[in-house]
Image 1 (cartoon, one colour):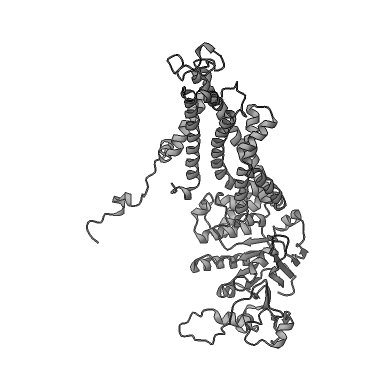
Image 2 (tube, each protein chain N blue to C red; image 1 turned 30 degrees about the vertical axis):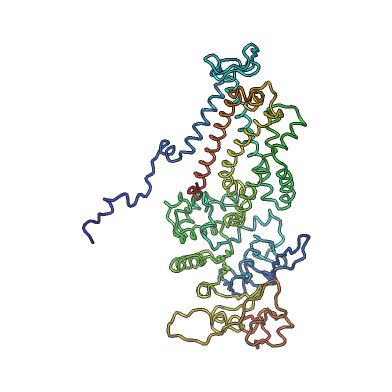
Length: 325
Length: 297
């Protein structure tokens, strides 16, 4: 998988939000929502991006999609750099990178019929798409498991899972290379989650689309991903193949995160790593390693030098001074 | 299961919580404010259109020998201090009030929509436009209209322009607010992400959200414009005194108010009823178009 060039290549992506503190000008600081993250996704691959609320994972997705302008860094889509493209050029690139948002209720315009929702991306690029739009819409409905007689319904006439299928059909319409799923199943019931996850997996097998699967749900990410990246306070602290990351987490934060996940076994008692304190503010971050204030094994070096992601063997990257590699 | 429990099919009232009548009649019964307001307004509009048929006298013809007569069979609402027939003048006055009210409502909607869309969509323009609007809003609309009328000749067109300028900020702020909240909707972001062009996003995803509140606001602006027109005419800054408008009739009757109150009374009643009709219609439309506010009294 590493031989093929990545479909999506993100290099040192950062997003800072300036805070206006005084009435005159920018006296305040800045929120470092995303702080130099790098990763690559190959064709047909799913990269899970996990982290707790506010760690910047959604902002990372939005910055890649240029729904918010990244402050620094590069985004390469299929060997072409897309950050910094003008609005017109970016619009053409949007065919290759699509998004599925968390809330299937608000991501569908309540005034449009289902067929028009799915047809919208097709109509946007009507000249570039062979064949009739109607047939394409019917085909998309079929592929996401919706019935043709549901095409004339409005979003409020669908259930949550059906709406998310509609959102997925819209995202698939332009045959994208990458779909960013931002908490795509978090708003759904567990049983519906499973259906939608299976649908995504099937579509990936059929089309070879790559997924960036942003979620806070460790179990879901473990199920869908090939590789997993863990974010803490705007940085990726560990990125590895799923089996390696869940089997042998190396970064102290990943270890704590995984030990906090519930185990579906009432007798399974484990030694949990309980973190002290709260996540520091992304405005006043600790020096050096961001995690050191809560790390059970922090050393003096951690306060001075920011650890960089480095390979500790087997394509397992960790940003920690204390991990032997 | 107790024997008294009926099967679901035998108790349809359990499931039909609110039986809704269908058709136009059902709509009218279900929305009394729209029915009453719209009906009264339709009568006034009809009256304005059919003014030449309904009027018993030429509203402009003077008859000094018949000055300030009480209502009679010949002059239903009496005559004013120049002997003109008040009934005919009131009928024709509806034309002025309705023209001003409807023109101002339409013009503020069009201009307010345009400015509001720009302000809501272009961040850099927002600051400039909204400060201008704040400036306009800081001046009482009647004062602004009086000042504008002082700069121009008194005519109905100038009244419309003056009142429109004074009312644009209200509509503009409303549209801008709706646009700002609509553009944050995930479905608008999803449209951006699927490569929808900006003008299509505005037309398909943002504009429909603004229409309902705009229609409601337009009815309120229509009502207030009719009042402002009457006030301007009353203080002599509105339509020229020769034009029979309700404000002018009241202004002319003012001097005789204590001894001949009917001169002021009739145009005042027509103005009040028309404004009430428009406001009722606006309230009805608000509840119809925004079901969440329907329970509000």
